[in-house]
Amino acid sequence: MPESAASRALRLGVAGPVGTGKSSLIATICRALADEIRIGVITNDIYTDEDARFLRSAGVLEPERIVAVETGACPHTAIRDDVTANLLAAEDLERAFAPLDMVVIESGGDNLTATFSPALVDAQIFVLDVAGGGDVARKGGPGIGRADLLVVNKTDLAPYVGVDVPQMVADATAARDDRPVLALSRTDAASVAALRAWVLTVLAAHRAGSHIPQDPGPMAPHFHADEDGTGFLHTHEDGAAPHAHATGDAEHSHADHVHP
Image (tube, rainbow, N blue to C red; front, side, top):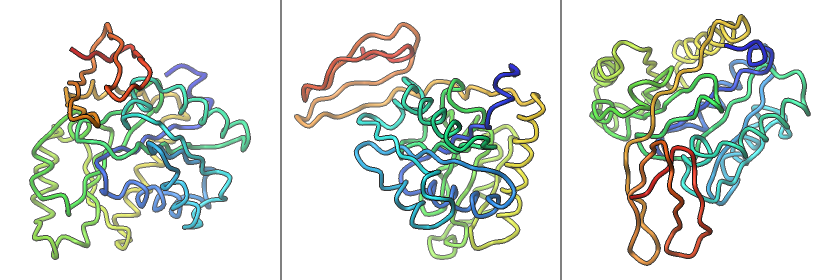
């Protein structure tokens, strides 16, 4: 890792589908570590600051350390295709509250293929939850397969949704070629301690300059519907072509963004 990256705050991305508990996980991280390290948070929503308001109301950090980015587009756009808004927000946070040890960046809720650009974050957590089904970990995708940590969240709900947590963790571990998987409940002290230890280990490696950000790979092709019932197939490849939504959005292009 370049020295300049090691000298700034660790940037930790948190991604996953809608409703898996990304904001709750970030609140858990803040509660576990706010007395030890200096943290800032950036949330991403398409048109609101709902997640930022949730975290502020939870009282996990000083409200000024939690800022919102309204992406105005597909959630993955601001974390992979054009990360400018999030990079500026991270730099502003680090400047305003220097020195920060870590900036946590929450993606808007997306599908199983969501990944952060390594140009934005140094490490990334992908979040699933038991309420999404015990088989979801077997479905794979770059986030599940290659994020630095996969969290199987809300394990306390497993008895109510008929999910075998050990089997789900085993499936996830197989899908990840033995990369780390953490079964987490915010009500389970042991799992929260394991999450805290993982974050501190990554932070120490970042500070030492030994942590190298990994790119989980581009998102898989997926379809976006427009309001008129049409839409487009969205893939992430080099040689992007400009595109526009049928609703009249301005045409835009990204380095790894193409629409056939």
